[in-house]
Image (cartoon, rainbow, N blue to C red; front, side, top):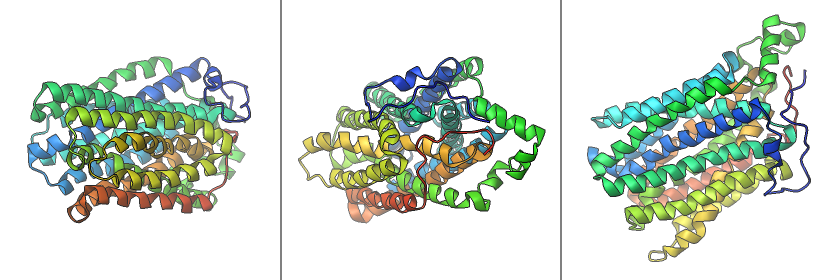
Length: 439
């Protein structure tokens, strides 16, 4: 049974960066699914990134060391890995749409509660529980969009969804600049977290407008009917078990390594970026927001462009290109000499472009690597194992900063991208792959 793609337009040759043909292929329910996933991801980014902007104020409020501050981020990311795995399993069991609603509710509520924390321990707990929804939202939303997108346009559709992260990040930067300019730091960070309850309103839209992809519906019918083909292919087995069977184990391990490399490098630089700009580069609140804005603009462009390049060059070549250039730019950015802050603006845009843009390929690539019967489990597990191991990097950076300085410690994260190159040796090219209900 073939997936009913949301349009029959084929991709044109070349990247076609300004071509919005991909959006026109999304019609009716497919367009609602796209916007629900994109908005969910943008608001997920806002709820997550307000922590990075608030890190210095939080550390002052609770008298934390840099290692303790980094541990909060690590706890969030570690639990988000569990959230992603659970959400992937739920997406294969109760549906992509219902899982998306649950994850949005979780990250909204616990972001709000983080603003009420009265101790370091409470904050770690609330941020960790926020991670359940934070990790799960991407797993549910990415699968939902991958299954409704035209195969020839899938990379750029998922790239557009991924670009919503930069929008949420930008909203967090604006909120940080305004709130910290009007309120004392001890109150301002709490206000930012309280704003995190607003994404819960998105659940109303998802509930009323978004439908399950046809390929998922057909897969469920095959499972329920326990057809001979479904049983022979293992479609009735627990999806989390299926990704560790011999036919999928190699892909599961290699895709997890790819995610570890990309996320380890990303979290090394971006968790500590506001602190780096304030402490190592002596920028003001407004200055930090301005320099971060350049990186965010680069990220937005990187997300969008990477989607096109994925559909043009293919998944493997795009991942390799972005991994190499991300590593080089982290080293260059953190090595800018004292007094040469103008270079931060020059390198900030390409740093955001490549270090963020690499993620646009994950939604389409992981969906194409795993069959529909275990797509949620595969996507959720691999991406979020990467997040779990990548979560160790902020704490490592915080610990290393005592001896290497913050700039030198952040540069250490560039080594993570070498894992991406190793993983790609063991993964196939999947550009343009059709997604079918039972495969």
